[in-house]
Amino acid sequence: MNSPAKVLPPLPLPGLESRGFWEAAREGRFAIQRCADCRHWFHPPGVICTQCGSEKLVFETASGLGKVYSFSVMYDKRVRGFEQRVPYISVWVELDEQPLLIAVGNLVGVDPKDVRIGLPVEVFLEKLTDDVTLPQFRHRERPEVSGR
Amino acid sequence: MSAARSVRNKVAVVGVGYSDIERRSQRTAAALTRDALHAALTDAGITAADVDGLATYPESPVFGNPRQDGIDMVSCGLAARILGIGNRLRWFSDAEPLIPVAFVEAVNAVAAGACDYAVVYRAMHNPDQGGGYNAFTHEFASGKRQWMAPFGVHRGYQFYGQSYRRYMDLYGARPEHMATLIVNNRVNAAKNDKAYFRGQLVTREDYVNSRLLTDAVRLLDCDLPVDGAAALVLTSAERARDHARRAYVAGYGMYPWEPRTLGPAFDELWACGKALSDAAWASSGLKPADVGSLQLYDGYSYFVYWWLEALGFCAKGEAWQFIQDGRIALDGEAPVNTFGGQLAEGRMHGIGHFAEGARQAMGTAGARQIKNGKAALVGCGPLGLGSGVFLFTPEPV
Image 1: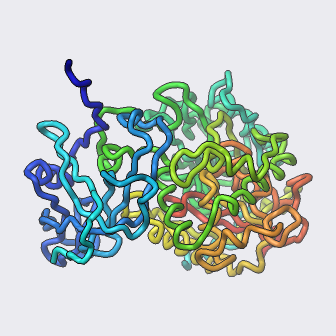
Image 2: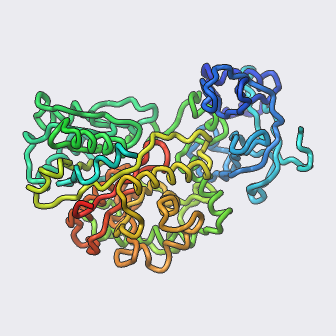
Image 3: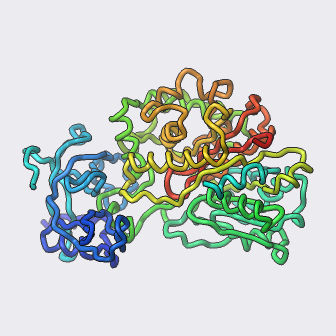
């Protein structure tokens, strides 16, 4: 018997500013936009460096390490692609690279009652389709590993 | 700041009007807007022929903002035709990205003499199509949505709810504390004959036990989409003296600041509110002790906490304590959302807060009038993204 088709979430439709992020993920890397001049990190990516005005924005492989800045344990089923997944955890992760550099993902493998602010997490890549790979987060068992 | 200070005491609200507010009206946004415009003109004692300026925030509530004029929003052009003044309009603004910006523009237009009477209005529509109010139902997510929708985040209460989650964890706020605000709103709405939830009191237990949408947001933390419209008439202080009632614009603070962080992050959101609160105090020359009532945006309940803190009525992280012990009730020392807020009135998307702030300063708030003669403060919006703080006063400051 065939397993039921996987219900896909809404898929990211990259724009000029974000193509580098999603292409890197598809290639197996977690890359975050960075200014080549002043070295400031940006997420979500932008079209110009709002720190120094530079147009030289590149995508650099990041550590993938961070801490839960905040979270949402979702019970409402009115969310496309997630109707059958409640309760699920969405996390806002402050990446180790820079204060308030925040990425959103799902926290996978953690019970909703165990998620808390400050929980150390790490990125892993979830391949959804041939075109789309999502960076997701899981609990980091060894928080002392800084990755740098 | 000097530009904002220059409008101090130069402009006043002289009329406020509403249409009926219904969950889903059989009438169009255009018809409801006509009702609100004429109610405001009647309140001001003028006719459509006197109006030569219009401003609104013409957002469509259907996801993607398709803008079907007269159905899900009402443009200034259509409003002018509704009033029969299409060829006499001297100034208008279909302003972005939120209703406070339309007020800022109208105040400055009147102060500059670009028009004599500006009407600021907002038409709200609760769509039956496309999954409801601003519901994301697409297979693909572009723009800012691409960073959240693939992870199951595309409801407004999730974006700001995670900020509330952090606030609660950092500062010790609990649902039992928020219950005070929710109960107070419904008590106040009993004295607002336009409020959708008028006559529907709730208990603290009703709130705490209401459906959990996401940790820690309950159904009763969220406002209810409605059909309705409201309008305010602005004119120069000089002309205002010929009107029966007036609320002077003492000052305002406004930024088009869209938070850079996803969600957005609580700390950035709070900083946005602080910056424009500081601007409003500087522009008006007033301070919290000069304020007699506060209309604070409550599309989600938790915004009220952050407004109180950013405005300086209490310290950061203390608003959940500040609202207790009757302090924010009609007879308290800091009455909040005297009309019931949009949690009890319905989602008028901020214009309800402006209407009530102006009415409190005009002295036309009826059974809910705060009689301390102090300034009426409006903190409108989700702190960032086109939010604004306005101060209205019964007399020039």
